[in-house]
Amino acid sequence: MYVAARIPRWTRRPYLRDSPVADGPHTQEVTVRRFFEIAFSMVTILLVIAVVLQLYFAGMGVFSDPTDRLFAIHGWNGRVVLPLLILLSLLFAALARAGKRTIWLSALLVGLLALQTLIFVITGLVFNIGPETPHPPLAATMLLSLHPINGLAILVVSVIVAARAWKLAFARDAASVGSSAAPAPDRETIDLVREPSRQSVGRAPAP
Image (cartoon, rainbow, N blue to C red; front, side, top):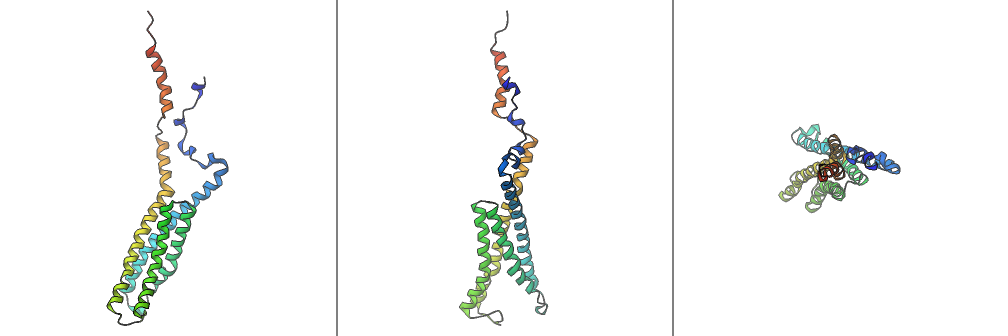
């Protein structure tokens, strides 16, 4: 009677097994972590967009009339928007418990962004030049040319972090929906189904 009344585990909804409702006291903790996972993903997407716009603003400033001062948009985006988004990415990566590798990649973005400014500072100190220097030395120009290469590195790392954040926030839900659509029977259920067949095969036919 117990075996007949037992509900096989494969018939239970898999998304309920992992649902915060089943955790009882941990519901609030799981909900807060879920919020940070989604926030982490959204901030990293905005970060990728801001980095792409930063490259666009640089080109816009270089190929425009200097009197239009369009290069100031590049500077404002690099000094205000990017630092804010990168710091938020690192913060949400830690709060969402995104994993050591993802957190370290987010921290790497902080270092790469700081390097963007250090390139100008080091070049100015070594060659004693400033932004208004009309004819900088060739070596200074070569050193300053690392600035766009480092910007490309920021873009690559930002895309990697954004992909990891998206997988953390949404790939698990897609997997749960897929598994709930076609649940597979477990080993215990298969044995329960096969047991009557084995008994009928082993029973001798009546004369």
